[in-house]
Length: 189
Image (cartoon, rainbow, N blue to C red; front, side, top):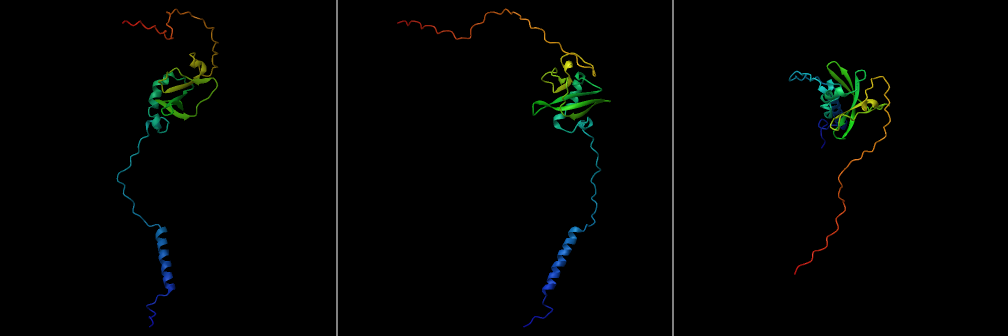
């Protein structure tokens, strides 16, 4: 028995059918189709910049209080042409490892993060105390107590005077050596 020709599908026709299906699939993947625009739920309101960004800094949690703390200590800074430099405490490293340059602007200060300053004749001012989170960068003579106006050479610091020995009368102190043991008391019978 032979099957009629209409019931047989030649292999070539099946191959063409697979090729057409693959081509249709590729067209579906790579041809852009129009899409409906998504309705916006609410108009977007621009977020105002943070106080750190307004002051010229990046948003960084360690610096949240920096503008306020600097404003407290700003009168102790040595300003040169409306600028000063200072170091800020790093709470994790436990050192002064953030360095900034500050410029006076109308209504406040503008901060700029910088590398650690290293200039001849300048040093870090330690006079604000151990609890202060700021160290100002000043001329060496200024740190020791003599003000030098900007642009003038530092005042030479005189050599130390000879030390004078001062006698202090103090009561005699007991020796730190242990006392000798006492002889045992005689036993009573």
